[in-house]
Image 1: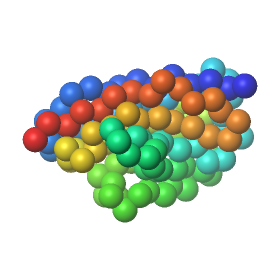
Image 2 (image 1 turned 180 degrees about the vertical axis):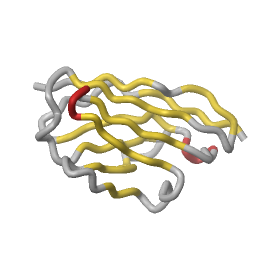
Image 3 (image 1 turned 135 degrees about the vertical axis):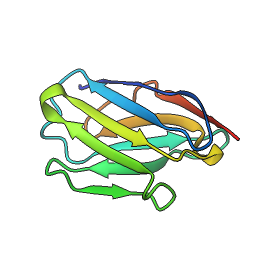
Image 4 (image 1 turned 60 degrees about the vertical axis):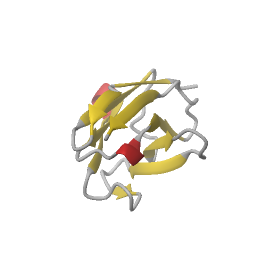
Length: 112
């Protein structure tokens, strides 16, 4: 089973940017789609963005225009560029796709 390791999180001020990376242990070129999720304290995990093998993207309304998801199948990596961050974006961020085990996630904290 493919495993993933998320990285790139950290503490940032509101309005700042972060780029998250998701490195997979195996090939992801056929996994359709790949997605980023997040879970804030006391809340359920929610879908943030997805990207298909063909590059089609979809975003939660709360992040549209601020986040960009992309994938590099040759590197078995998925990215999430996050701009104009808000305190409500604070959460643990995970990437996942069909047949992939959930990773440990990466913590994103946005201070006001």
